[in-house]
Image: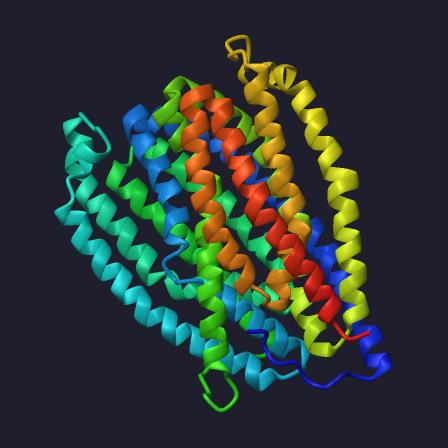
Amino acid sequence: MTIASGPRTTSAATSAARVRRGQAWLRGAGATLAGRVFSILCTLAQVPIALRHLGTDAYGVWMTLVGLTMLLSLADGGLTLGAKNALSAAFGRDDPAALEATAGETLQRLFRWGLVVAAIGLAAAWLIDWAALFHVHDRHLAADLPLAMGCFLVVAGLGLPLTLAPQLVAAVQQPWLVALWNAIGGGLTLLVVAVAAQTGASFLVFIAAVSLLPVAVNVGMGCHIAWRLGWKRWPRANAAVTDRAAVTTMSRWFFVLQAGALFYLTAPAVVISLTAGVTAVALYNLLQRLFGLLVQVHWLVLAPLWPAYAEAGARGDHEWVRRSVRLSWWITAGGFLPVLFVTAWLAPTLLRWWIGASAPAIPPALLWTAAAWHGLFLLNQPPATLLNGLGRLRGVAIATVVGVVVAAALMFGLGSRWGAPGVLVGLSLGFSLIGWPATLIASRRALAALPS
């Protein structure tokens, strides 16, 4: 499944590429972190404005749509992630023809599938009783929901091809562009929310505007990277230089991994609500936001390594891969993991600072099981990033499916007995018994398979 590598480069070229990758990683991590901080600040600023303008029910629907965006990330079947590895390999081989052809082929496939998603979304907008599904009682909001959902789902489908833009940017080692355009998107969203509140825009107009913003950001990002690559036209597919079968196979495994990651992200709250009630969900959500911020920062630091591993593999610079994997482990175990447990120790104080005097008391069992789960998730990222970059996915994808089934059974079994802490213990056990060992073993084998 690994994208075929080109011949080894000369020592001087390899050394130059190694320096370039190291600089790109540092720039990418720093710029992405800065962009993410700016976006978080914009999000914090827009919440009270939107809540006052929309009201509780409409704001809740908007947040539901934001969550639905995560599910729609699966709509491409993992194609953009599979294409990212192929694009990174083409960039590593200094093969502009393959780079353009792979981008063109992926855009064509995403465009066709995007039309299908838009058609399904349009039908769903009118066939589903959204007011009943979301428990909306306001008649004006209920009347707006079909058009609002239709707009959201159609825009998401038609915008699907443009989701290739951030993957192309990452593949050519320009992650600062993603940070720049994400920051622009955060600022524009805040502006749209403020203007909507100032002008008294309807819920339908509001949803239409915020749905179009991600598409506009991806258009800007795509045009920006095309200009930097010297592309003066829409990238064209060329079957002679595109390994479509390899990209398709890798995309399927990426889809399985995406679905597994979505389960680990969303399932705890659902199972806690079913076994321990919504009050426990609210407590877990506070901890998830607190620890999740650290997990996000950790991923922002490691994310530029994914395409860098693919490029290094294509160039034959395997020593750089080994050193970078060791560094990613030091960053995780020596840096982020201690900060996570310090955060858990200070969590009651941090929650009082954040929420105020009304901050609920968090049971110690829930606090520390949540911290342990997020710690396991952190430790999984260095080997997972390596396997993503090298395209060694089959074994881990199969283990992910088994791990999800085991984790789900343990979550319900232990959750019904011990409540929310039991759910998190079951989740951690399922992951640490199946998913994490499989990732560690596969990463060790991948490193061992690299030529000296």
